[in-house]
Image (cartoon, rainbow, N blue to C red; front, side):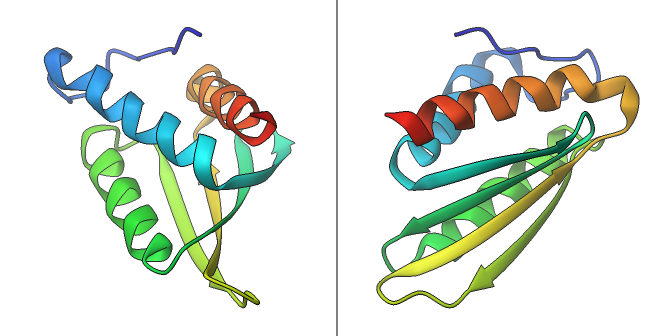
Length: 112
């Protein structure tokens, strides 16, 4: 599955596959639902073991450092077991294709 990496991304090229693998692993193990709010906004619902919120916050913060056009809002929610997290991802219209790539990968993870 391809991923659109814009020129604005400052993550070194050699590190990009590793970061993408981190997201893919998170998506495959924790994403339960993806809401495609609109072309510039997606909402991901995740469930997982204790520590999920910290893991998501760390990954989102590192990604926002190299891709400043991405805005991540991470919110913890109550869960009967483990942790539940909602990630809001927003981008300017010029980066809608990047968000679409993220959302497609999250959708694939939610279905696996």
